Image (cartoon, rainbow, N blue to C red; front, side, top):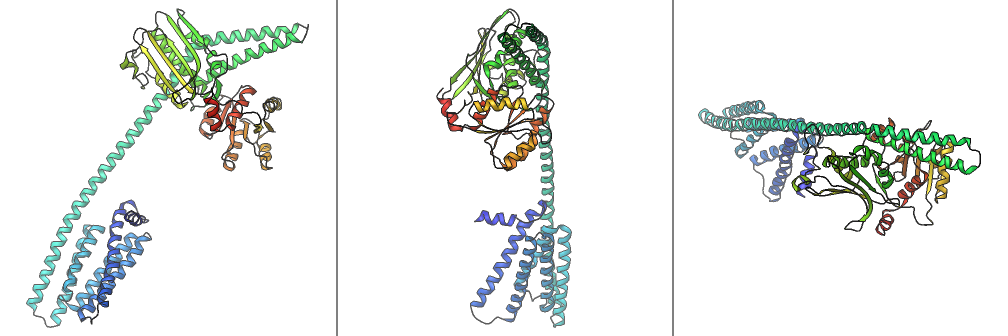
Length: 584
């Protein structure tokens, strides 16, 4: 109850500077507006005729109570200053009337109430208002003295009473003036301290933002440095790919059957996939947008890093990759995960300056709660780490290397990437015997649902041939497929009541593009699962900023099977996914 009353008093439309004063004034006005009438009602119900002086007090107190109620209403509607001034002026007017009618002896016990306008003026309006109120009360006393003299009261007695009253009021005014001056000085000091603290807070915030920005810039520089180190290997791989494509292209001269043509096309497809993978890696490393999770096969992604790892390590280091034959899919930012693996590999390289053995393995494991995880193990036979160093390796800017050899950000990036992907990283290390990093990610991603499940998919793409390929793959995978050439046609399909379970839309389309379609549909269907298909081109930064966070993003090029996996991932309930994962 007390909290509700306090909240009610605080809910007044006044500025922050007057809020405390408004709460205090409201309490006073409520007390006067309620207790004074209650006192007189009790007195009247008690019986007995009112003496003339009591009738005067009844009128005076009734007027003050009415003023208190009117002033309270003014404060509640946001006229705080006006309400306070109205009550103060009303009280002073009542005092003047009392002295004019009854003289200096007339107020009697009510003279103590004259102190209240002094306090009200000083606390609410300042020292100048306090002394002005004292002067006005002094004039009221003089008016009362004149009234006494007109009634024939002895001048000496009148002067003695008037002087006593003025001295009393003066003492009270001095006390209030000193209190108000001290309070104003204290409040000024508090305000100054508040400004200093606010300035310090802003400075700390700016410093934190600058530090985070610097770290992001250093991470980006590290990516560019990695690209520079790997450029030779990338050029070598691309030349090999182009050589393979050109070699298969020469098979057109063989006209002895369909089978050689199929083999040639299969070889071209494999080479094109390798080229696309290399392009994606370069664009992943160089971009500066936020994390973009996608579903991918960890084994395939790490197999594509093999040539980069061989370029990274000294020829005296034996590199071993133990990748699973079966697909192990995870949902993470592929580029950042690959960068994390390369960062750990870079530390392993620096720990084996004279050669050694580096092993990269992928396996499916269960954690202590029975969840299925994909574990990437990276081990080396290098120098190892002391326990004190091992505990700090994920701290930003911590490094045991020379200033020219490292920024201390490599493993900090690894920790951040695993954390953003919902995973963890475990490190074992023994001085002189090497280190082992275990990167654990949630997975595998839910496989296609059980037989009988048939999610409805709306596929939007302006490329007729590509859309036809995807429609066929989705239908063969057990989906009901609606298709549209652009965003406007897709909007028409949904407007006719054919709402899908999953929307799959290309980004670049004439008219209503994929992002605009998603925004329009999100407002009407907040629970609709959506996948936006895009490349890692200049629009990546815009999409990272403007795309709703719950919209999946699938990067070109991709296989129809991966799209099918996305669809079933989005239409599989968490309970079903947990059952499937727990059974692995």
